[in-house]
Every structure is written in structure tokens, then in C-alpha cells.
Image 1 (cartoon, chains in turn orange, red):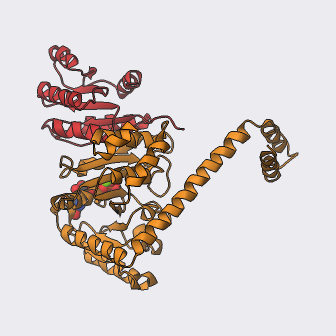
Image 2 (cartoon, chains in turn yellow, blue):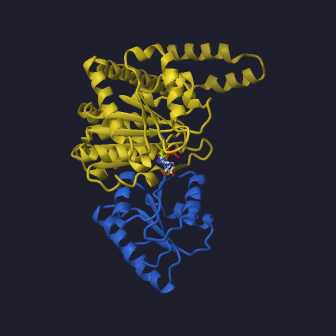
Image 3 (spheres, chains in turn green, orange):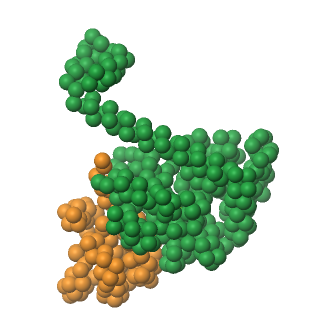
Length: 313
Length: 132
Ligand SMILES: Nc1nc2c(ncn2[C@@H]2O[C@H](COP(=O)(O)OP(=O)(O)OP(=O)(O)O)[C@@H](O)[C@H]2O)c(=O)[nH]1
Ligand SMILES: [Mg+2]
């Protein structure tokens, strides 16, 4: 596919068009991804999760700039929620990514969640692959974590950074036990504000309760993104975590788990599409609905009837 | 298969420091079901063109108050053309003298909307003129 070839060669326009194609599942998107896949696996994936306004975009901008200055090429994926009612989304993260927008080798793409769970969209992992295959060394993904066991970004990145800020109160979502497990690194941004040390103490106390911390003790980094403070230390911790993963063969294990989940998901999608297509054309479907509505039948038995019909076909 | 979602970008080139109008139109476009990329104040034409490419937008709304519209618009239109992005529907908004409009349109700007235009008018226009 010509578009894939151009994207692999690093053409920004081709990368962007390929993302559109895959994100909208336009004809040929899976064929395209098949051709993209062999070229993936080289980029390092870093996630930034945290509440609205905690400074994620500003942090991503400064981290990306520092990495750019170390000659890494960078992909950035900034995800914002889509309205479940209209499907529209306001994607405003670029406003705070001013330092890197026009740097050579930096590619930024804003995505709406489009009904995806946990603050990421269905297409996110494919968009990551496209950027990876196009030759980006590091890919930074910004998303608001929603709920506490719904933070799916952790499943698709190598290093997951949880961003907190002072002044959100003690029992905020980000400090609940569930979310503590998803952070490989904790950032307390806006450390110029009062209460930053208190947040550090709280996170630290939470980590002491967590048995997982014996393998990798999650560091807590204080930053002031707007003033570029703490960014170097954050990058150092990212690199240390990466080293920890590779030296203990954990990176491979992580990526294999990801592949397993991905196959399962794709399979489920295809199966449900297959079943849906076949059932839709089945005459008894309408009849069953009528019967159920008249209480002559029930939804539970009807499913068995439909499955039997599918098998007979 | 899903239908392709419309992606719009609202940009504010030039040096003036007001973005209320740009934010209002951004929200209205979002509420009409589009994905709206808002880039903030004081964007250079190069930054706008580069963002337009990476975000693969269908529509670009430029909001200008500074009076430097002639230069800014033509730099953006030329940049889009060079990067083969000339299918993008470009719309201008703001205080632009009537006599300047023909030239802007010649440069490829599709329509110019004055300060009092309702958001509905703009959205209807966008939906009717989207590149296929
Ligand atoms: N005082 C202070 N302000 C900061 C700091 N970092 C970011 N900000 C400001 O916080 C506001 C929000 O920053 P963003 O980077 O947009 O935050 P975000 O988490 O990406 O926000 P959403 O994408 O809307 O969830 C902006 O006005 C930033 O300038 C910081 O370290 N200190
Ligand atoms: Mg943001």
C-alpha cells in the first residue's frame, strides 16, 4: 500500500492520513495495519495520566522537548473525552504544547475517546503502532484517567506516569489504592503550590502498603512543569524504569501480555460482528422479539434458540 | 464500519490576545458532533499548517482581529497548498474590511464571516461545503 510505504518513510502527511484511515476503520484499514505491524516494536511508550488541569500537557511538552534535545524523535498522542451524546470532542491539548509543536521530528496527534473505556480510544494502540513504525523513538500518551480500575492506558504503555497536584483533598481518586498500582512513576506537579510535600508524603505512605513495591519502588518526582523544574529528574526516572524492565526481561513479558489482550479483543470483535451479521438476517429474530414482548418467551431462552439456529446454518 | 468523523481546527494567528470568539465557535462545532482541535493564541502560519497536516483536518477556521489578515491568510493558504493540503475547507472570521474579501477568496479562503455571525450559520456552512 502506497500510503503505508510513505508513512514508513516518515512522511507526516501519510502518517496523518493513515491514522485517519485506521481510526475511522475506513476500507482497507486492517490490510494497512498488517503492513505496518512488522515495523513496530522499536518505540518506547510512556503514558501520562491524571486529573483535568493537573498539567499533563505542559509536562508532556517539556519532557518531549528535553528528549528532542537529546536527539530522540517523538510522537505525542493527546486523548480527550468525546461526548457520548453528540460524538463531538474538544481537543485542546495543543494549547499547552507550544515548545515542541514546530520541532523537527515531533508529531502530535489529538484523539477523542469515541466511546472507548478508561480514557483511551479503541484506535489508540493502532495509532501508537503507526507512529512506532514511522520511526519515532519515544511515544508519549496523555489521557485523563477515568474511574479507578478503568485506567486502560497502563495496559498499552511501557512506563506509566501518574500525575497529581496539591490541593485536591486527601481522598481524591488518584490517591486511592486502585490507581496506585498503575503508576510506575508518580509526579507531583505544580510543586510551586502549597501542599506539595504533603502529597508526596501521602503517596509514599500508600506505596508502603503496596506489596508490589518490592520489585520496583515507584519514585515520586516533584515538578513545576511551567518552569521546567524536575523534568530532568523525571526523564532520569523514566530511563531507570526502562532499564529495570529490560534487565529483568519484564519489558518482553509486558509486551507479550499486551499482544495476548489484543488478539483476544480483535477476535471478540470479529466474532461479534460475524454473529451480528448473521442474526440480523434471521427471520425468527423479529418473531422472538414479539414473543418476548408478549411474555410467551424470555430473552434467556431466546439466546439459546438463536445460537442453535446459527450452528445449524 | 464507521463513518468518518469530521475534524475541524480552530486557530488564531496573529498577535491579538483575545480568544473568546474562537472558544465559542470551538464549543459550537463540538456540540454539532465534530472533533475540534483548538490550538490557542498567537500561532504562526507555519505552526498552523504543520498542525493541520498532523491532525489531518477537514476544516480550518481562522479567527483574526489584528488587521494583519492579508499576510497571515496568504501565508497559511500558500503553506497548505505546498503541503498538498488544498482540499481543506478554510473559513475566516473576525473584523475584515469588505474590500479585502475578494482577494482572500482568490487566495482560496472559502468564506469570511463577520463578528455578528451566529454559530449556526457557520456550522451549516461548514457542513454544506465539506470536502468530499
Ligand atoms: N502553577 C503551576 N501551573 C501549572 C504547572 N503546570 C501546568 N500548569 C498550568 O496548569 C494549567 C493546566 O495545564 P495543562 O497542561 O493544560 O493540564 P492538563 O492536565 O493537560 O489538562 P487537561 O488536558 O485539560 O486535563 C495551565 O494553565 C498550565 O499553565 C505548574 O507546575 N505550576
Ligand atoms: Mg491536556
